[in-house]
Length: 409
Image (cartoon, rainbow, N blue to C red):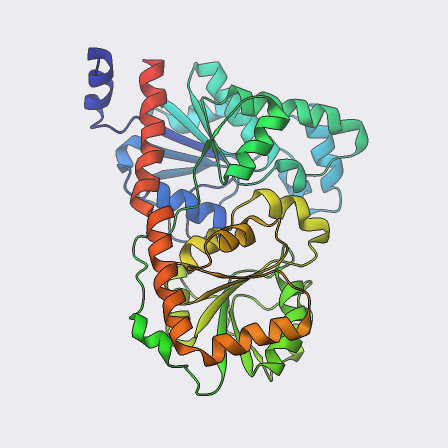
């Protein structure tokens, strides 16, 4: 290690001063915030600051948070959202000034900027701030932005140019899956790195022998945690016939559907909603106590979600694997979670068929084959430790932060 490197790392005990300048900061209320929280939960509060566009309720880190409202943010939640995003892309909507970020930071002088590529107005501001200060920027990429921030045709070229500029400017580009990295390399012309979603280190498997006995004798109880959007609710609706035929039931931990999956509300004979638990850990403990297996249900065929399914990576899967329970993944074989299950048959059951009898037979086997359930639970846990070790994920993430700080020094 060079003298410069040693000095850089020793002055902050190996933790460069990090500014999270993003749409959402680390918190425990939504998937993106949870991932940031887990990556940064061991970061010293004195070396960390968060400036976020939207304040979200929920548990937060011990560092200081500030809110930096984006001009015209209210239009994001109105029927004018596409106009607002289109005008953003062609730079007709003013962004929050860099001086405003400076005033919020006061005496805090960041060495590295971190931003999730979510909401263009927020990550464009992060790029402008980092550029103005000569700071390295680390980009986390969970989704391709144009999947969620559609613009009118007149603004598409400008939006793609903006996204390309952000991605290429970043010193490190941390993509959620190999497929996402390949897509971004094709779209933006530079390579990135893969950083899989991180799970909680607190999550532990239940005793494997518990998997051999059904929670309700004669009935297979399958758990699902989270929202029913992105086609998940639609797929669970389609599976109801197979669940009934196989004497199986769904227990869902999340809010009742308002769009996708509304038929689940009328299926009380085999489907029960429990609402959101206060914390993710409470939901996982409830699933471990009440369920025999867990399900990740991609819509099949994917329809409008095909591109998303093919490049994202479900954070739910890394958590499912450590529960000490069988994991069932349904959907098209192009979905990243299904592909993972197909490549790890000892750890998860992949169901790509649309044939009702085949789906039913699979659920019946899960219901009746106690040895298979236990083997799947043990295989899932081993695979989860090998591929999604949260300590390794955090260590890799910290290595990226240290590396770009040293490169700047």
